[in-house]
Length: 126
Image 1 (cartoon, helix red, strand yellow):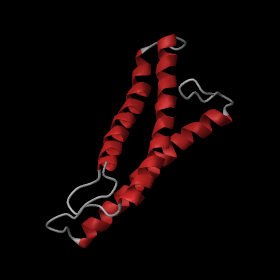
Image 2 (image 1 turned 60 degrees about the vertical axis):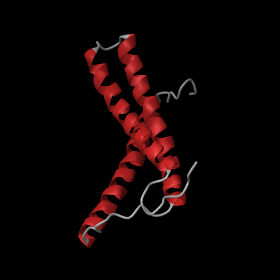
Image 3 (image 1 turned 30 degrees about the vertical axis):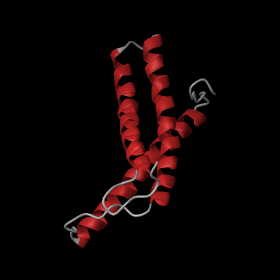
Image 4 (image 1 turned 120 degrees about the horizontal axis):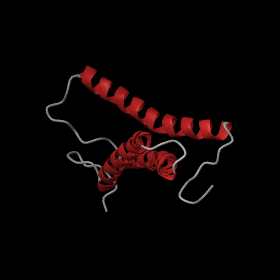
């Protein structure tokens, strides 16, 4: 398995983590939106809420792995023709913002549950 980026391609781990994160983030969003289809107090609504919590914590765990993989993988592949400097700077800023959200949102949810004294489910662990 390839752990280093080349000048033309991202490494296999980075690609897999990218798509896994995408699927998880969509699932987190979908689970909290789908719960609205069910009446309050129903087990189905509660199940969607629990899945939202568990998948959100999975995002937090995987974004940490993704950050390490990004550091270990080295520089991103070259873009040809090379974009303008302002575009490169904007891309770096957007990456920082996205990573910030991928860390901040699950941590905010964790803090909200903790301060409310509610258990934080994580696939059977509490």
